[in-house]
Image (cartoon, rainbow, N blue to C red; front, side):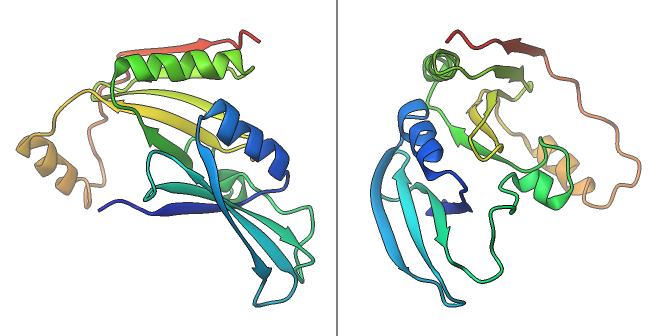
Length: 175
């Protein structure tokens, strides 16, 4: 079972649309427009990620009581946390797609952080909401020992740190 959609507020829907359709390669397939239960109204835009069961969605809000343009769209900043804590990660099917996504981001003017986490390989950039977004390829497998260690960490007060990333680099935008 996966999730159907992740829904986030947006301040600049035109920038969100450009990023998620042009830069990320997702397709805007649906919008719901209607009143908000608390007053005002909203548009709820749905972008297909790979099929008609997986979406990322954005709210464009209008005239909602208590909502002004000062709301924080960066999930981590809104929670008072470092940027890397709350982030949005999308999968890729293979290393070639990960490389294609990196080149696509760079050509669109995005700096890209690339990290080999020893069990998955990731690239990261920021979206127009200032959220960290990731494409991630699982490169390892999971053992019973991994599971036992993970379960033990639920109660461990002094854990042994994981191995540092095998590789980390920043790729500058090319556009």
